[in-house]
Length: 633
Image (tube, rainbow, N blue to C red; front, side):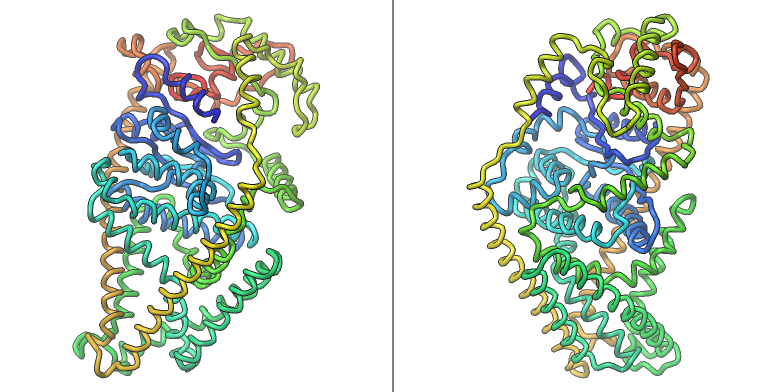
């Protein structure tokens, strides 16, 4: 794997723990301050293997609105809870910072070949989650930095969304099962993992398994108050619909599956409107005394109504804690509520029945992808880039600069102003001018003769590595893996069917004997379930408060540092004498200077050197753009 060569280069010399690799997608927009915040988390603890940021979905439409609320709740509660009580289990590849030494520890296992169906789900369906699983097993910690954020375009169509989540769902379940399988070993190697963290993950995994049947029960209960439909009949009807859709997903094409999924999503959305009305009717009956299934005569609320009030209250308080930027995301909770059956029932059935589908889903080329790319280009052309955005200048640079030169040891140890090296500016200005003239189409590759010439040693390296990174094709292995995936799919479908059937039988049996089995107005099993989920939700809320406090401290510290740096921003070198002699200390300064250069967005005139539009530095644009840590990646 070519990553090993990059890591060997980055880990040369001293300060190996201060070498990082920033991963980002092509359509991600981020600011230099976000990279600074990620570096702060890394420098605080050398045991941190990766740090992820807050991701904000971009786009419009119901599918995007659903994801906006989902991302908000996931980061507010799920990731903060994992960060506080243990470790984050996934640092998304769209925008995260990885420590090179941590990558080197798990690279041999990460680059291994898939040998079984379960390994395919963990390794190939979600590479970033698989990488983080290996880091957690090796004893590393993964943090979440709420101060660092990025914006990316999420799936805006129904097909894209379902295909993306098809991979994410099975990959998440497989990696959670793998962690729980080796929990006794991980407790020894990773000191951040506690028993509370394991219980939290077990409850999360169980809720995923019984999620489909829980949705059926919630919908059936709401229809009783809204339309007076008997619970048994509505539950049986939903079970038949789920079975029919499962058969369709197993026997028909992807197009047919998506069409039926759209129809079920529409029907369930209409049904959820009725369920919402039924919930309101139940609340009114509780307050008026018409409902007999209350906790106590003096406290005339049912357990479900009390749980709903507590959950909504915690969500509102969580939104208030993010009042400055993200409180408005709670408005999209209505779309999320209508799509709960689609996300936890229809999508789950679709994902399980398509485990055998080894396509990536959202990266295959096609008419839809081409149209989306054209729309993005049109929008980016018409949009005025913000001064704090890196995406505009990066797009321009990537069109004309395809290779970059590594800096010499002398240039890495010294800070030299570009103005003092006019040959660099002339060379860069001529290169960009030539590329702009010869490459009118951004999609066409640049003329190799117009690009900067690589050094002989580096040129030979890239020529030799081409043969090593070519994927190996083995039809016998592919056919064997396909057969194993079919067996695994059947096993998982059987497991989910049994667990959801048992869950529904237990709930219905206790509900039918409500007069005999009743505790505070509810059946004992339902009360236990509500209590467990309330405890988990409270734990997430408390973890969120703890994380918000640390984020506030981080913000104050960063502001003080920014005010301190403002006095020396015109200097060519940091004022701290220690930074002049320590690569590890000047590394954040180098990266910040790189991002400041991107932020400036220089205007290059033809036949004119770049002098007034660059920041103090010692290399060309290529060196700064791809500067990670203190090395060029």
